Length: 276
Length: 126
Image 1: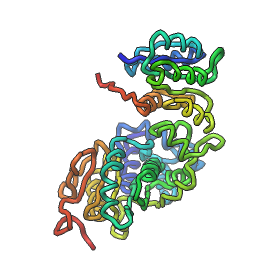
Image 2: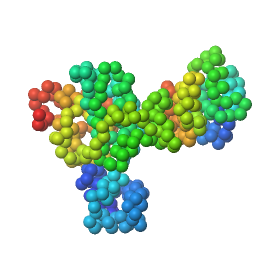
Image 3: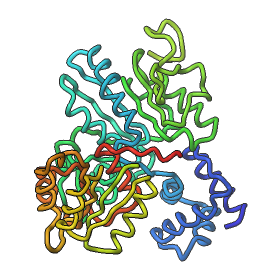
Image 4: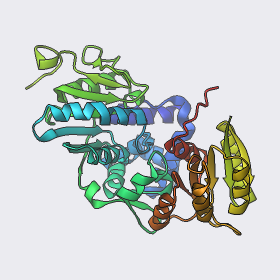
């Protein structure tokens, strides 16, 4: 793949998802595009690139963007964050709400391990009612997440065996999340670069290991959007190596660190929140 | 240095597991069935046991039952590592006192995750 091919690709995924496509990842991109070419019944990557340079349809652009995103995730990723949510964050949020109802958004949930991990965790918290939404840009990932079907390899990364026994049933060659847990998550395709104003407010937003792959402008846009969707006493969780550095006035680090952030001024006297 | 006893009748599996566990800073011993493992454990209890299920002479679950009845035998962390992957097998192993359960095939990531899960986190920074 030539540098100019990479530029074409970078432009496509950049415009659609804010994703940075590092020029030194041409090999990885080529491998992933080969799979797209195959699925689209094109003879190879060259033919796919040609199609992308001509007048590509929406579906093809989606497929390419989807393929070039990193959707790698595991159950209970960064366990200490889930411990903190279980022991401190969720009980505090639930305690401050009628009926212990906490609205949660797992933004960019990839194949669904994060929202399912939250649902499992909440099932053991008394007096807690999670209203759990999960979104991703990738239709393919959402389909898998909704189906709740995971390979033997996937269920062995991050998931304690007791939780596997309790929340999954074995199928022929995979493990499926039990219906009672699947039903607790609402799935929705959403692009984080799009206007978030029509979305509701959330008490807890997880947007982990997303910003690190985005351009600075996209990071700023997403952080501004998320700040507008967070309840005044809500909590934003970023990935372990991510920060709010591109929108420093929007959030402040919550005590305890670990990628947790809150809005800077409680009770909303002034600040970043627009609209209501 | 922490010790791990690998119990598996396949020499290939033992070799693969040994390489992974030594990289995780364990001193490793090997046994090819439950009876051999029991003899080693009576000599000195390891901190952890990576335990196959189907083996000649004494299988993994028989060994586990016997180990848990030994003096101090409740202490070692036992992680099953087997091709048996039915929920009823997993439930039986947990009831017999297994701390974690790996379904073969496995890799280094799974071993590391499962041992950490069972209470043996690794400090691999050194």
